[in-house]
Length: 524
Image (cartoon, rainbow, N blue to C red):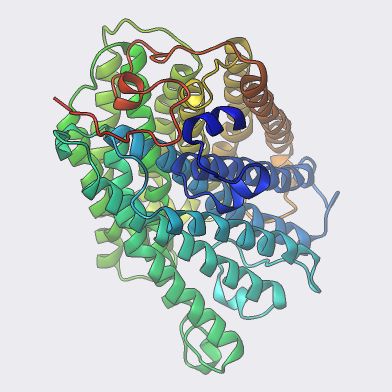
């Protein structure tokens, strides 16, 4: 790999370790983001397996209740801010310049910095397990009554979230500037690939809500150390206000994690259906509508906090309204596949898995949007099932589809198709064994975030734990696939997938040169 790069640009770029630390190249930084996300996925996965090992049988078996709460908190934070978001930004770094015909990102040095902030924050989060009192145990939502107590780990978490937020804002500014200013001649906004569109809208969401998160965790910090009473009820503050501010960030955040996934799937499905994406303009408008609506639904996380009925009604209807543009998207993906000449390579399998399972997650979201139902199901495993169907079989599956789809382009080599298919089928079977029973556990009233449970829930929990270990171990296949592909994969064609239409497939060799488009392509 290094040799080819030296040929590409033969002007004294550092090699070895320094190449990676000092790089300002969008491909290198994209690769760093993706590897970081994968390491964090495995770290967050280990925490999840500990959680599931504890829940395998009723009674306290493996960990203490305090440690259990630390696991649930850190699992959430690591997966959201360490795995899903960096993976999506990795794709943006790799793909956006190539898809719009740009030589690189708009701010290459800032790009380097926005990546290198991540490991710092990640080390801070993970090392909080080893400080006195252990890691944060107030849930990933950093709930004040729990967060105002507790040791130094809570401060470390607040600081880590600040750093992660700065990284996200810088990444987002970079992506917006790149997309708006560096498109090739002839590439109008409505000719951009859908992945670029979804990332443009996501980046605006990031810029809008990350400062809100920064503000609210700063208030937590001052409550803890400087005698303010924003959220401390004893001093006249309001912990519910924290929830309002947090979820005003938190709900757009879940769309920050899913919109790029929609973008990836909208590139993969047309390529393997061998026909253009159905309803391109409606897809763009749907993405925009989802982003706008995401700002007015936040309090559906808080139906049980004593809201006035009129507010409950508003948030119920607004939440149900988001299902419309999302439904438009699902319809368009199905319509793209309709009568297409489909083949089922690994990226397509993950994309179809995404459409089917994400839709289940969407429907359970609609169930939870109905206020009276939500009051019953709030804080049960039904909620856990809902958001894992959206975030795992939604965001994570799209990430897998994207990895398999673009690996040949990135490395210039083909991945092992048999292993890829094995990864898909094992993941899908075990994923459903893991999370489908949770719907029933939730309906039967099993509360989440609790390390012990009543006897009647034992069978389904044992089933879910078996699914968890199967799903977790299946992810090691991906590691094998990627390493095997980089080392010894067969040479990939420049236009690997015949149905793929975007610029990186039609205008660039595999692997692409260090600077993709020195002379911008003319888009007709």
